[in-house]
Length: 430
Ligand code: RM4
Ligand code: MN
Ligand code: MN
Image (tube, rainbow, N blue to C red; front, side):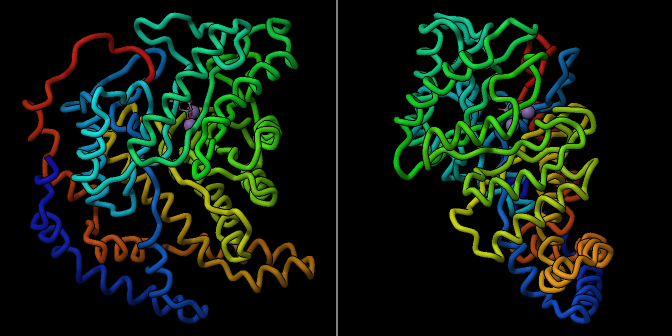
């Protein structure tokens, strides 16, 4: 269905905006030149930026109260990938998709791989799911998975993760992301030490199945579905476990999985310093794991995270190759539009971080000039880099204005009869 977005549609839409973009770009180039920055160098780096899209983000999300699906939602992984191809066609910075198993499991994974290749996409980190029971499953995860008190449950969860690695190999992935919902709702319900010991025992077995050229990403989350304690609750427990497991294990930062007001950029710096930063699940939040669109609430925080990432690149930090992924839930927007917007918002933070005058910042820090150090970051953050983002997209074959181009194609309307609404319950997340 990506032919709806043939070269002509994008070119026609771009033609309407190209002159104005050229002017805005030139104006910005002049501003940056005064600051000793070559706009072409920045645009070049913007074009090389890539962030994976979550397969599960292509459907309308929901809350525990309700889900309000939109028209022509993808009904299976093949259709999810078609939507991902549309996203990449328009934004040109989302060339890979992160699958979630068993949600995306099909009998013929080779066929899925071929479909993905044909769409010009690749697979990113594979996500396992031991936070839900699946039909026909022998043991329940109601009281946890990798840390469950029952050995049989733990074995089933380990087995699933090992299967995910095998499936990921067929799909050309090179990382497994493990997030568990294990935890407790009552003080005293779980023995903190024993449950983490059980988690680690299980994680070691998964780690042993990780190929040498793969990585195991461990994802922490402070609360939900467990509301008193979670086994992998924060970056401290995460990095301790990653260190226990070995060099293939690293800590993944999902921006929504921290307590409010936590200094996430500093966590990122610490993980980089100890060579344990796996990558990110980008999203935004106001209260907790809200899974709001990246860049919708706290854009300064996202910029500060990228300031650490660009700084690490600049310093040639060892073992530094973080995976960028989106992980958000689209409850009230068209998921394709949200994912396009969010990918561009993350890219925006990256580009702004490239504009930081790092030599000047260094000097201000050494001289304890707090005000000018802060202003140095602000000069970069306050620069409107929209023309760079649009130019990068256009030069890569994408849309100057992805949302307007998407709307001009009337994609959902065109697919409405091919993708009838699936029946069943409309409550719940994902
Ligand atoms: C969790 C976590 C995981 C994601 C699931 C769907 O809160 O963020 O990364 O796989 O949601
Ligand atoms: Mn996540
Ligand atoms: Mn989450």
